[in-house]
Structures are given as C-alpha cells and as structure tokens.
Image (cartoon, rainbow, N blue to C red):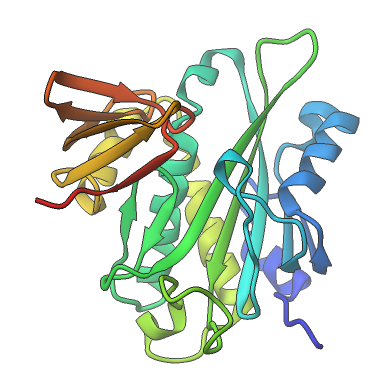
Length: 267
C-alpha cells in the first residue's frame, strides 16, 4: 500500500526562518518519538531543531505507554527541542502549547476552530479527536537540562472504519482535501511560534490556552494512580501546566503524569 507523505524539499523551504533546521520524512517507522530519542542518546543537545515525519507508525505510543495508532490518513510528527535547566519545571506546558499550535494550523488552513482537552488532545467542534500529543523528556548526563521530543498525530482524512468513532478529520473541518505538505508546514511553523513564548511568557500562553480550552470551566472526573477519583470543576492551569480542579475537599492540582484519565463528569 502506498503511503503519502509530505514533500521534504518543499517543507524545508516553507519552514525557512523557523527553529526547524533538519527535516526528515519517511513512509513508515516504529515510532517517530523513539527514533528521535535514540538520536538524543547519540548526539545530545545537537538534535535540537530536528523533525521526523512518518506516514505510518507501527509501534507508536501515548501517555502511560498506551498504544498510539497511526491509521491511514494520519501523519506522525516529532520535533526535538533543547531544554535548559531553568525551563525544566515548565515541561508540562509543552503538550499544551503544542495543542495551541495545532489549533493555529487548522484555523489558518480555513478550518473551524478546534478546542483543547487537557492535557494532550485537540478536538473538533463536535468533540471528535483531531490530534493526540505526547511530549517526552531526555535528561542529558551531567546536565540539569536535556532535550524534549514533542510527538503529534494529526488526522488528515480518516477513511471510514480506519479509526475509532471518537476520531475526527481535519479535512472535514476545512471542507475538502488537505495537502500533507501544507498541513505539516502550517503546524510546524505554528509550533515554532508558540515555542518562542516558552518558557519566558507563560502568562501569554496560558491566556491563549484558556480561550480555547474545552476542559476549563467544565465538570470533570480525574482518575489518579490507585484508582483514586476526584470529581469537580476544572478551574485553571498553573505555570507548570498542571490542572487545578475544585473538588469536594478543596482545590487539587495535578500534572499530566499524575492523571490516569480525565473525563467529563455527569451531573
């Protein structure tokens, strides 16, 4: 089966002037995140600015080692970002600002504006999942800093039956076919722009996130390790990207790593 992928030469030209300096495109790999992490182990911070794009993943993964499937009609994009020691405490913001970049890219292509489900999903206006995000961090030996790998799955045009009913396609939002090169370029340019405000301008990122969040202001059910359940209103996010839920015993602050599941609560 032929796997369509973005054109690397056109993509490189469109991304001139951004932080992405080395762009590689493959039809298929096990995991774009794992491939870049392996490069970090070999080259350290020299991987900063590298991007790997695949039309199909055979061993993708999501949060808590869940399977991250890449069905036909999806792109997997991973990008490497050097992180100094002072920025490590703000790593929780990387998945959130990446969601903002997906939001920016889709709206620039003329699509209906998506919303963001904390911490790592981008949703169509009807609630279907357009994109999932996995940010991972590799601490460099002898350093307080390291390299973050930001992985994003983008649903371009999912054939019927190729993905769960909870998925949605970007092509449906823009009202027609989506060019893979244009989408990848739009997303990576937006990600470069959003990273320019991290970690020095968390306040501006938070303002933008609150504006398009589908989670904040809603009643949610947090599942924490040990099957501990908290039901309350998601009221805010803090400067480390953690969610604040006003529960029955007062506010609870939880990071993405602490939360097994976050779902809407009934009633």
